[in-house]
Length: 142
Image (cartoon, rainbow, N blue to C red):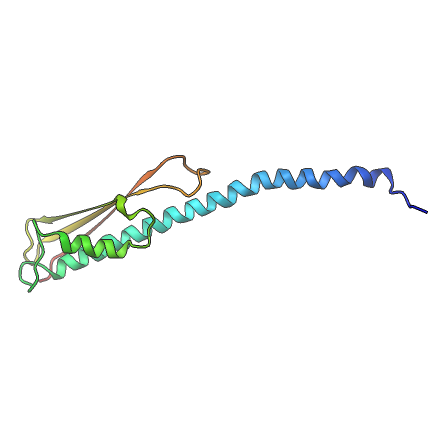
């Protein structure tokens, strides 16, 4: 003989599916939003470190070093920055600018600016792209 479930238990069987669906609608965007925000801050930190590495290279390769870099010779700085940001997606959207004040002699300052166009993996947080900028200024030693 079959036992029948009470009417109250039959009604609750569909309730769990509805609750799961509603919770999923809230949790999935939160998870993807967390991933996007995390990748944004990762890109910002990577750019900060890349700008710092480029400025570090510039201060030890001033006018008195064996391999000087300066106005008109920024290719080594760009290469150092590109090596530092190799893990970022879409590395072709990176711009590197270096400027010296007043020149590349010891005691002068060098500023390396790195610009990156960040695009989220999902479009939960931001629908489009954001431009991330990072600057590093240091005093030339050699």
